[in-house]
Image 1 (tube, rainbow, N blue to C red):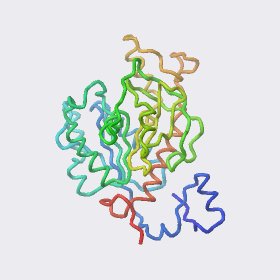
Image 2 (tube, rainbow, N blue to C red):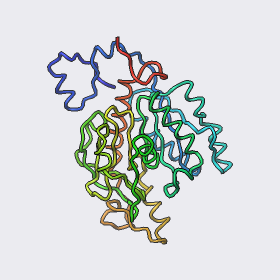
Image 3 (tube, rainbow, N blue to C red):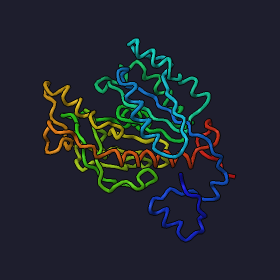
Length: 310
């Protein structure tokens, strides 16, 4: 949890510069403490509902703050599989209900429909409603993978470019922009990617209200994390939530169909060896930074997106 420190303390500026989580005493005076309400709109196929939940909950649970995760489903879209429908009915709240109680933050996952046009996606009209509501009523939203592409198109008219070859591996990156979310990340870090498209960095840089936070060393891979200057919208092309074996499973599933070995993943590029997991520590720092920032800026009323100061 952040330190409550007077801004007059000589060490304050140094602590702030070094990324130590701090909150000004004047701001803390207006802050009532309660659990954070963080939603997860899970658009992944039903066979990986539980795995996706576990991966994101693991990242959310690595802070001393109390968090109430809310699993969110679209009102008019359900899984085609019986087991998927049962899981949604048992554990997920419809978006129409979530709107009434509010959220402090929201994560919208990717979806396994990269090759479909938006017009062909049956739930696209309702997802647009979620985008509009979140942008006006939620302190910060993380759009992951496919949802990042759709949100960039929806909010900023930025198109994804289809890649000739699948971007597949755990690539080296650099932090290129320091803000509340990149504090204390390593200068060099790895992030898993598995996608057939890329949002060109030049398209992001043309928008004065958007910044790239973390970028791959390989220009063909592009950025991992970008967002608006007010951190209301966060776009992730990579998958920091992945478990050690995820790329491995995908690789062996598709190997006979010509899938190349994932880059920077198996030691010595030898797929008989256990894969390296060299991204999770920085992933935890990134999500902890995000949660801490939401905690410091959200209103006590989850229906209000930002704290009101007297």
